[in-house]
Length: 306
Image (cartoon, rainbow, N blue to C red; front, top):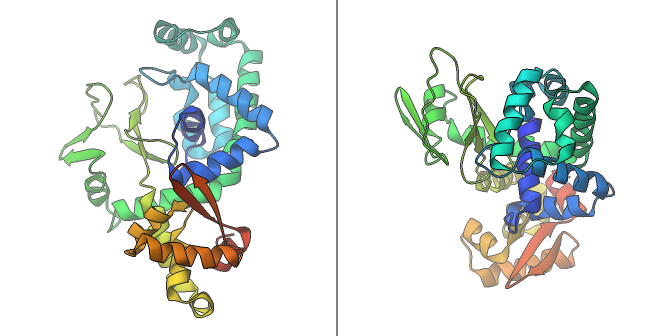
């Protein structure tokens, strides 16, 4: 997981109208957390520094993020002043920049320290508590894309986000551009909070990087398979179908989604979720014409995911 990319994309998920059913539990949890002021401040900060296209400064997501949050924040603090001035100039050309960004654009040490402190607090509230979930989704995505563990298999597994036509990797991107590696390696970064299309650095001189959204449906499939392998006792207690329903809920699912995942009718799934809810293993919340099912702490504990 690259913490800075996840922070940038999480801000988008917190401010958009529809984050999708699988992100609803995280979204609701973050919005209710005790550090709501930290979250709101972080969202305002990231909304200015990383607007939704067509450009945001590359210094905010340094390659050092591959080595963790500490290394990434240190790299931000060490960004050369000339680079900061140029990137903020490009940002101002596409999005209004308030006066408080001027010290950042000039590379003032105090401003950079304040920025990284705010990012660290936002990360602690929005990303860190969910790191196990994020890492699990990323690892599951990687396993599904690369069946035999080879680079060739991984690249072919990127379809339809990307199309591998050796030696060219075609990426579904917001604008037309060519990136020549010239002997450099390409870093592929899976992201839990990225959606729709991959993203790359604006500056072709930086280490070639493509950040792409993980396939969230694979996460519940992995949980279902894991539950069936490890929890024979649970199946004996609840019955095979109800234990499968509990596992398939994942991080949250509607009755229709559960029916599709399990190959069952919505009415049959509804009967099982009613029993699981009455047993204290699920909660159900109506959202428009649908209902969202989520596992309780007890339900997660029985599955070994709590």
